[in-house]
Length: 284
Image 1: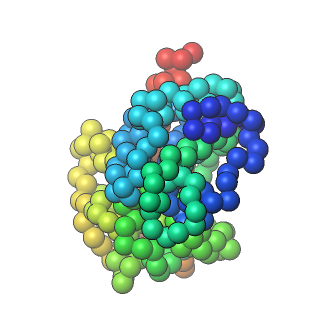
Image 2 (image 1 turned 90 degrees about the vertical axis):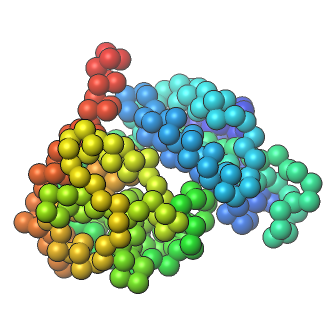
């Protein structure tokens, strides 16, 4: 796993980041995390589309077309022989003298990517986990997948210190998402999740879940709901790339539903698993 992508070259992973890279100094850049299952990146096109949107929102020019980026990432997976794990890639605005404003002359954006082995956690998916609540103190453009993640880091650390899988964020009593995942609740047989506006990142797994619910005839409500609604829900789960879908059985000291993974959550999880299980069968 020593090979990395730097711009359009695959090379040994070593010290390649310049001290004046704007991503390093300002968090002035964007990123994507793509799950790899049985050697195949999952939903790569959707990740590339979101990368394009993030770049557009930050007025950042990608250094290559998404088709070229996709090809390079696939080569990186092959170079590292990755079967199970993730691709992490980021694009910064480039290297320039440290001034807050954009560089006066156009600097070439810098692309960096690497792979990491990461096994699936079917036991956690099947048995469920716990979460904690945390105040959402992030900026107001959470829809852009930027490198500015310190509030997320602090929230995740709270989860770690409480032996929880996630920290579920709320802004003024309204549930938004979690530190590194989207949040769903089930009430009365219907699914609820925060609208895909500027307060959350529209997760690729989140989008796929909504599509799968249409196939399963499960009604999805993209609307705001409160912490009280969440704590009194029949089922709660979180979703993210490679985390997939994890049922939440307890939040802080409050047991959710009957304290077991719910029927609808399990239906959605099984449908999601079929996305990469079919690919594995075809590959075999």
